Image 1 (cartoon, rainbow, N blue to C red):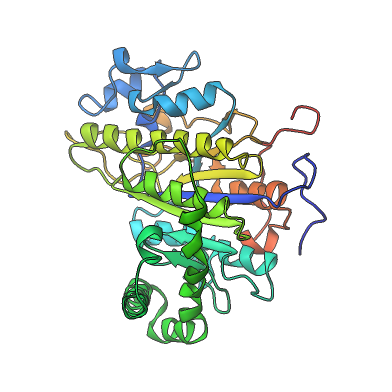
Image 2 (image 1 turned 60 degrees about the horizontal axis):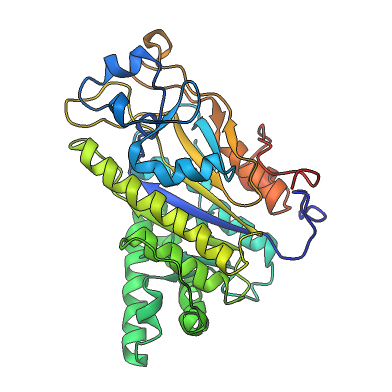
Length: 390
């Protein structure tokens, strides 16, 4: 299935690496990238909007949330592609089901193989390196789960290397138990037990190889004191240890703000965008940024109208691609915010299928044929710099 070489236009000196950042809970894209000239935005959200005086305009019609100043700076430097209106037909408003769809590319049935697990299978068909994919956080994301595919899950890179053998064994059993509880409701007890029987212990086996990564790492970059900052620093520590990892996965939770959205969204975007800025600075300090692309996604957007304190589950969200090889700018179309165009009378319509974003990353960045992995052929974007423009 592999396409000969990757077609992003630079010499093949290093293998391309993809870092996926999942914003769990449904980030409010319209309050992140604000259509500040649209009266409908303020009319629909009399309480949960960003005041004009606080917005950070970057085009004649769009502004960043004030807490996203680091992302605005990276955008103005040309390092950020904003994918507007990302989604799929008949968007699910269930967190679990929506994430399931994003993780498996299957909106019509419950699938058992994650899209990134299929990528690992293509990159390392013999499963020779348990660190081809590394996830930081508790439990393995569905995107990295498939029978016979090994990916490594690490909760705490610092503590893991300090555990004694008894503690390590106990933590592994706890992680496997957590994994079983997480996936059993979706794919059935038998499938989960089969998965654990074949690959469960292998999922965590690569963690032993990671113990040396913290010792090899030094940096002058200061990350914000938060979970996503810690996870992204761990990505740099493993990436710069040259352990052959091609896929990294991290998560940033808390975006399900039905209430108190304004203070929660400010805090979350501050943590996220400061961490992403530190991450890119750290990579560059280590001369390790040129083969890294970051995808930031969430399971759905929020509804047009606020509920008096927050916003409820909707559709038509947004995603971001970040990296040195990214041709920064706006991609696809911002969904119409005019009431006559709202989906089901309350949602933003999606303007670009998320499987097209995956296809773009697979074919143009990782050099893989995306057809089987995403379940079809979808329109792609052109977010990477060409050789002449690089």
